[in-house]
Amino acid sequence: MSQKGLDSILRIAWKTVSRKIFRNIVLAVAVGLLVSLLVFALLFNRAVNDDIEAASRKLGADLVLVPVEAVEMAEEFILESKKKDFYMDMEIFESVRAMPEVKEATFQIYLETLESGCCSVVEAQVVAFDPKTDFVIAPWFSEPPPPLGASEVYIGSYVYEYLGLIKTPTLFNQKVNVVGDLNETGTGLDHGIFMRVEDLNKISSQATGKYKPGDTSIIFIKLKEGVNLDLFTDKIQSNFPNVGMMTRGTIGADVRTTLKDITRVFSITIVISSALAVLLAWSTFTALANERRREVGILRAIGAHKSHIMKMFLSEAAIISLLGGILGVAIGNYLIHHLAGNFDLLSKLGAYASFSALNILFSIIAMLVGICVCLVGAAIPVVRLARLEPLVAIKED
Image 1 (tube, one colour):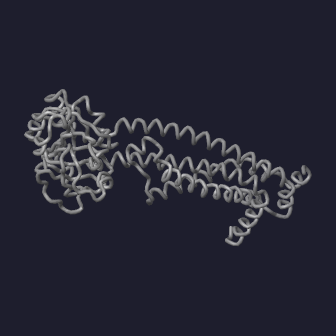
Image 2 (cartoon, rainbow, N blue to C red; image 1 turned 60 degrees about the horizontal axis):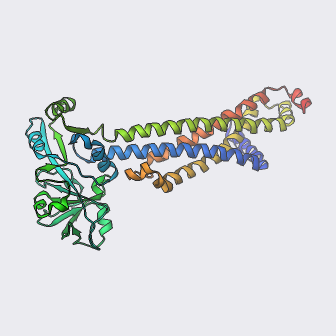
């Protein structure tokens, strides 16, 4: 078909759509709701998966060791920024670091803050670490920070926003100096206050809670190139049966399982919504075909082909579904960007959907699905109408 012929069909289709505006708006809204649900589902899934993957990559470790009973709590700190305190013997760290497969190893000790006075640090996890062996915290500074001295701390991005201009907050009833702040990581490090492990002896046992000298909370391990991770984890499990392990692939396993269940719910809802949109399109265009039977008969009688009739009606369906698709994309993106914080899973993870090429691709895919669903529903009565003989169509009117 020539460009001129296509333009004529589209102009006729637009005029017809605008004549029955209310009925067509209902169909466009139905398509829009389907598209918005699909956009939201795709972006929700992507936001959670991206956050889990980012958190596991940002740790900089091939393997993470924690007390076996604290695996879930460690994941909550890594993924959800929840304050935790759990401990195991520091001798485990020394033994692991001496293994020939290990390239680097570092540890962190998790403590909790005390709320005391107007300048106390709250809503944060105090972490004692060894700057000499650290490879988890150091990469998150824009510029190399000054080495930590006595009573000096680094702070995560969330804590930095909380403290504002306060450079000497109270920590465990003592003044400390903030000498560096981390860039945003999207992990529990954002809620961290990082002090030297040597400074733990300045804190009273009442303030440190369950922690005892000789304990550690979490061990991060980098393996030498070529070391088989599965074989090494088997070795760790054999040597330290009371130690729990997390690899990059297992971090967030429970969240991934929950996400799969949510995705199934989304899938069922989308299938049902698609079926309803098909039925609504079928109903709308059945009524439209009945109303315009005589018009179609006359067009056929003066030489219009079946393909012309189908293109004319399907152009109307495409215009309606395109309008609905644009509406759905706008609604879906609004929901994920402005209302997703009300979802417990996203708010805990700190996950969010950002504007990106993949975001645009998902929106286009969702719109195309909505258009196809509408066209399928419209095609059923349109094909039947296009097949009618011209005299039959005129007489039946």
